[in-house]
Structures are given as C-alpha cells and as structure tokens.
Length: 187
View (cartoon, helix red, strand yellow):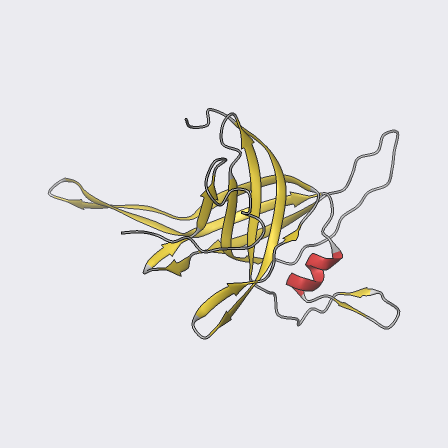
C-alpha cells in the first residue's frame, strides 16, 4: 500500500563522507536534533527537442537536489564536523573561514499513513549559515537556522544515485540510521 499522506520530520542524521582510492566511505551517523522543516528542489529540468513540426524528443536532466533544512539551532558538533569550526584555548567556538567544508550524507524520517519512510542523501555539501535573532516582546518567538544543502549523485554500479528510501517493513529499516550503506542495485 502506498502513502496517501505524509507528515512530520524526525530522526535527522548526518555522516561525514570521505573520498579515498576512488571510493566514498561514511562515518557513523550522528543525530542532528531540532529539525523543523525539510524541502528539496530538483537541480535539472527538461528540454524539448523539436523536429518534423512537433516535439520529437524530451531530454530530462537530474543533477541532484537543492535542500533547505530548517532547524531550531545548529549544533556545535555539526559546525565543527562540517564547517571546520574549532575550539580555542578558552573552549570558545571559533569560525574558521578558510576551513574546508566537508561532504556528508543526510538522513531523515517522514511519517505517513503506512510507510514511515527513511531517506539517505549520499553526497551533500552545506553553505555556511548566517545568524539572526530578535528581542523578546509580549510573546516569545524562537529563532531558527536554515541550511542550504546541495545533494549530488554518487556512482553505484555505473548508475548515478541521489538517495535511497526505506519503508517500514524493508529488511534494513530498523538499522537504517546505524550506518550509511550504498544500495545494491540489481540488473
């Protein structure tokens, strides 16, 4: 049975990705708490090829996705792991602007009426975030942080793979966030 509705966002994880000897490996996933909202847009599109006075062929391009992930706050651990922040001798968090931004896998879970899908995007990079805050007034409105993430495909058996989606009942569902595993594609 397929989902008729989806809702919720939880179990957001990230895992550092390392490229060595022509292959990607992934560290043990870490929680990324405080997720409020997730959206993605396709990087690519379609182009119509005209011939014989009609649409002769449609070229489709899918180069990845641009993701926006809204969080209540970005953890110091994520800032250090992904953006290269460092701790100084006073244990202060220091933004190092010439640090290399790291590639990571991004995982999350969305609920639904039947599937409770879990997803891994494999090769993600995030744009460093700015900061905004405001004064309390008659009511308190919590601040939030939005990450802009580019997810690009990874090669698996000569196929370009952007993400893997597990549904409740799949054999790897319970351990899905324990480690990042590339899919085995048959055929």
